[in-house]
Image (cartoon, rainbow over all chains, first blue to last red; front, side, top):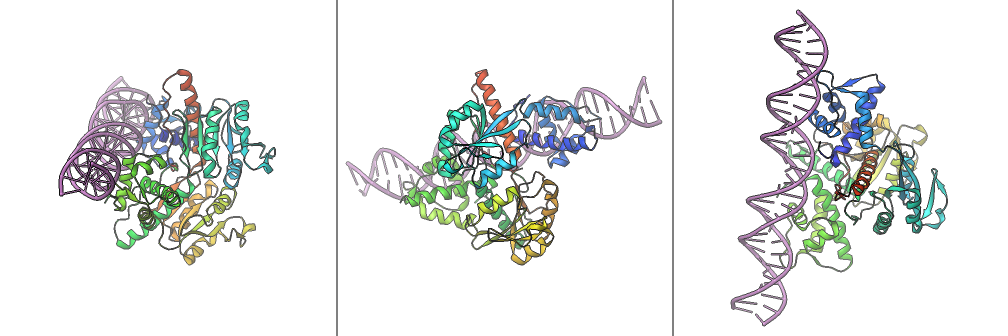
Amino acid sequence: MARASYRTIGRLTHYWRVLRDLEAKGQTHAYSHLLAAKARVTAAQVRRDIMVLGYSGTPARGYEVRGLIECIESYVFPASEQRVAIAGVGNIGLALLKFFTGRRPNLRIVSSFEANPEKFDRLIYGCRCHSIDRAGEVIRQEGVSVGIIAVPDGEAQYVADTFVDAGIRGILNFARTPLRVPAGVYVENIDLAMSMDRVAFFARRSLKKEHAASPAKAPSANKESNS
Amino acid sequence: MARASYRTIGRLTHYWRVLRDLEAKGQTHAYSHLLAAKARVTAAQVRRDIMVLGYSGTPARGYEVRGLIECIESYVFPASEQRVAIAGVGNIGLALLKFFTGRRPNLRIVSSFEANPEKFDRLIYGCRCHSIDRAGEVIRQEGVSVGIIAVPDGEAQYVADTFVDAGIRGILNFARTPLRVPAGVYVENIDLAMSMDRVAFFARRSLKKEHAASPAKAPSANKESNS
DNA sequence: TGCACATTGTGATTACCTTCACGAAGCCTG
DNA sequence: CAGGCTTCGTGAAGGTAATCACAATGTGCA
């Protein structure tokens, strides 16, 4: 049973969503073909991904929807509440806080941190805002293991260091700074400006190709945004 | 001169940023080593990426900062204003609108679309809000080539179809629906929930590894977020 | 002027995913 | 109960992107 890669984990959460839809529609079984079509991947890819779960379907019936859902849940989702903290409740940070609140199973943003004293101690979407200087203390106290960085680029490394020192092992980074973290700490970067530039670039290229009447092959629909 | 891949384009925009910083500090030349260190990639990677630009450095001096900046700009950034439209000015959409306004060179969000009539015709960050039903018309009129989708999942495909029909060739998709688009249209997906789940997963795995005292090898800091 | 050194540009290699393709296995039909 | 069909599980092959490693090149110094 191979170790799940970054991409595999992403797809598994996707299958999970598809399976929930199928279950809501009353489907009890699903073939890899069906999952593949709904998730826009190949059937072989689906089977490979499910392989890492150690879950088995049966030829002729495919995968049992309920069983597979539970298997994915126990594999990729936290068994008990996993706590998250967010640094920066500006423009993007606020939107993320609102977006994530109550949305992921067993994942909860419990604290936010800010440099701006005006926001200290306020409750924002049910989440207390602290000074970034108290981050270490609060994170340890609350048992936070995941951090979101949504602060200006220049402060990102400082926040990351604070996070790591306090025991955080996974960081979702929206700053454009590539973070330096010790081995074993997972960082996923989402660089909105980079993604925007890239989309604009390929849109232009596609238009050019059209003019040149060449078969217009863009890297096509898909990628995950990270740095 | 190889064709630039999705990842290469991303890194080039990153080098561009690094180079601008260097220029601001008065540096006139830079070695691939230096750029690599600042962008957290390998020197060979930097040289390969620069290769696709057709730009050459000199052994002994490395790359000329000013020249390389201009070369990257002319390669990845629009030569003249490229117009963007955004569908959905809810939580995330609004944050994006605010985030992107005036931030990228020659890239401007000129219109927004909504299903909610209350917002029609309002100006939001200098950008007029239209009914989604008028999207085709407005997009053609304004010459928009890039679209951002920040609507609820269920509406994403409809918006994408409208965008594509109107001539949009690149889409930045924040909905969790994998979009079906014709070949030649570039889609970059940013699935925030998926990224969050993934970070949480690898954070847990890292903690577990620590307990198991195995060498804790996470996929490590880096990835792009797309579907 | 010529030598020694550091860096570039790039063919070759490696690593990682994805896809192919096929043996094994369960179900349905007759 | 047996045959045929469809699907799963997975070793092998293929593709793409990153890394290695080295020849070529230009610089500064003696």
